[in-house]
Image (cartoon, rainbow, N blue to C red; front, side, top):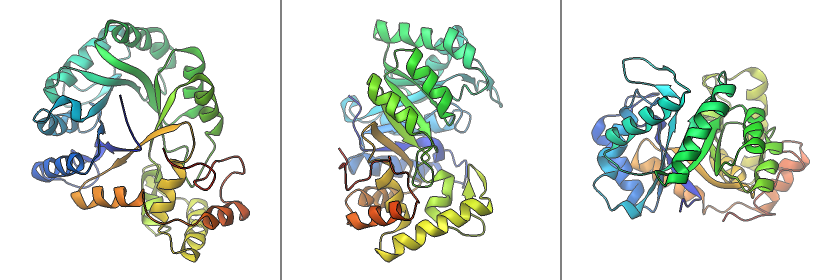
Length: 304
């Protein structure tokens, strides 16, 4: 059973954004396990398999019942490159390669990874293959993970999914994906959030080199983030704490996966779950039009 509320996002493990020595990655995963983090999310695309190798080097040494794991299919990383493979055969190859890299026999959850330009193939090839593997017990659960929430909503309404991973589209900065979360609630599909800091700007604040969607944040985004910062400062709440707590308050959200590059980052993310956040913060943000009227906040629904 995949449990939350906070999971380990493995995209940073191979040093995609800043160099991370293998020993640091190893120590960080061990610290997360010791601190009570039980779900780990990774993908072959993260470092051409290196994230899976680094994660598996730790997870293969601990009892299997101490963690759950999600990885992804849809991209061939068998050479020094990556290219789409949204075929039935590709599903089997990808999962076999992931198990080999991680030295693990069982994958709790397999996502279709970023099928943005491959919706038909994902629907006709990948999801039926994953459903068959779920039916046989070869994998535990299936889902789709991407940024494009309207496409995710189409998958939710058309397929028997267990999970969706929504990246960057339901955050303190933007709540356009609320219709998707409503659809997930209605169909009993659990939501795993990624990108709750919008690739950096909700962690760094409105600074000159802040990133949004993995690019330099445009002026309108920086302006809105600055407004969020001002309200958070009035209540002495760090922006990162407000961002994490807000995103996790929606009842459809079962888990948020967050990048953790160091043991200290693990501690900081876990501390944010219990930090004091006055209810008046959410009232003030709503009053200033900085969060959608229909978006649940932690004062109306506690984290579970």
